[in-house]
Image (cartoon, rainbow, N blue to C red; front, side, top):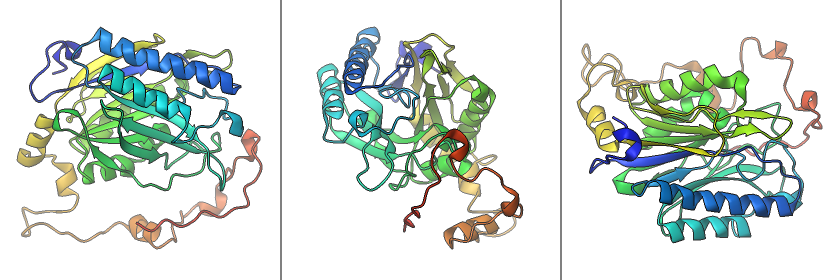
Length: 333
């Protein structure tokens, strides 16, 4: 199914490269500049290593490492030199790219941002992480929803970041908007290995959607990221995976044409369709109501767990961050 890592590309295939980038140590603007050069060089490595590759995906924190530093001197802007360099690399090597950056926010903490550029260097998808990995991460919660874009070879792409993938609603939203391939970039370390594996598979199967996921890799002297690149078929099976070799690019061919076929033809376990058409064997068209209390409560701004008052960690003070005083702006879909 993986076409031997894209060596035997099918007419409807999308060959995705997952770059297990060496975890960098970043402290200064000069460090960011050097890391930008390395990432751009790896775009060239991807193209040179596999002529049929359509998309190269870099992990979360590829530019900034895991320091959680919010110093404005090392943050990025969409019109800044880092994004310009990524645009040029994609254009030069005629390949799509997915990149991570910590984006300057003039009104609060930085955003954890991911972008997808096409093979002309044009911006196709712009996403801000909805679920920062609290209490460890200080990033502002995303405010752009979960966008979906047209991808290479007629595919539909979505991007989520790291902890986002632990919420099944994220993958469901991506699929609901039409995504056939969902990318997940991360900086996770070894304790998350099992959860990483099962959620990548479940996100694929529950939505009849291919998933392609990659972490940083190696040590920066303090933290150890795990690599563990994974490509999953729409039935949840793993079709390609990496280990913990830094800077290795794991390639797999994903088949959005077969995703579309399954979504149209599957009866048993067509979960993304059946979720909104409950019991269609018994009632015409199935039940289309929403029986889920948490969905109604979240939409109404009154989400509250039965054990809400007993939750002990509700801010970032345990990780050395000050208690926040700003209120989140309520997003209107």
